[in-house]
Image (tube, rainbow, N blue to C red; front, side):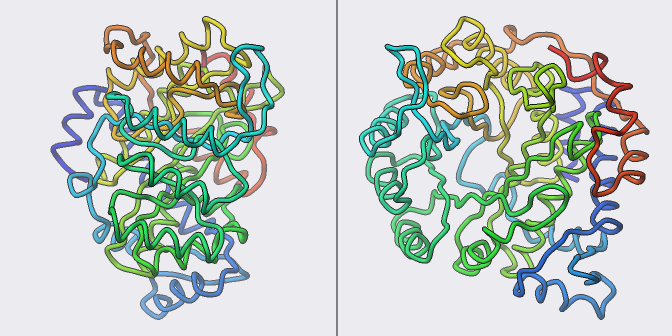
Length: 404
């Protein structure tokens, strides 16, 4: 780990929390060695198979098991934070809402339009606190959307590539400007490569484009209900993607976009992005990655509110303030989104961006230090690839961690 960042993290988080994060990395290595990742994409499998003779990987029954030495070897070839084109403490618009919120009527569900995409890009370009943007909304034509983003916003951008036409256009944009990332949710719980995206992941990496690797295990559903448990599962999934990219193209630019999430039993075990602990959980993910010298992109400042309530704006302020207090690299979703990231509100985008201009570390709520819970790895050893709603740790920790 990078000694300078380890000391910086200790000063901000404390010895116990940094010790917990260091153990999370070791736990993720155990997961990759012992649980593996289900994978049927031929070129990914072959990339790992080439290392079987060295004892660095094992392919068995459509699962890839990575030895710790291979992971550490791959991490050595990833370009570090200081070499990345986005500076620390950068808030992005980010996300991909399927709908636009009608701010005047106070109602969601509007179909997004190219004009909406242009408006988002222009706001991102103009704002001094917005460092870059993802799509924000989803248009049916992904090539049209990336053209709009590239034309109207010169700041760093990221978008998906799910077709050969989109890949061809992304390569053209990359030749014109190097500050783009291609986003992939390469894996899905429990520790499986998503066949919907794996083919184009290979193509994008081989083309030399920077990849933004997301993963979203949920504490209490697909991961243990404790900080280190859900962090370890998230970290393992993203490490698999980073290793795959490095084996396909050593030196490939990779962003660790692990997005650990909490299932809230009060809302039928759906994710609650408005929890103080959700924001802190993602900040912890960022610190682990920074200590490993990996560019890192997490979630903070979102809300569980369905409408433009005072709580929605308070959630934005709370999440942004926690980021200012503890430090981060890149954050997505801190401005425009409402419950479950389904609706995109322009009014919220502009008001939350103004909040980000004035918010300080002093605005952050107090949080309990996150310490290592031995039961997290016990749960992973016992439940493995099964769902964690039946895990005794879930009910044992309800109301004790992951709180408002």
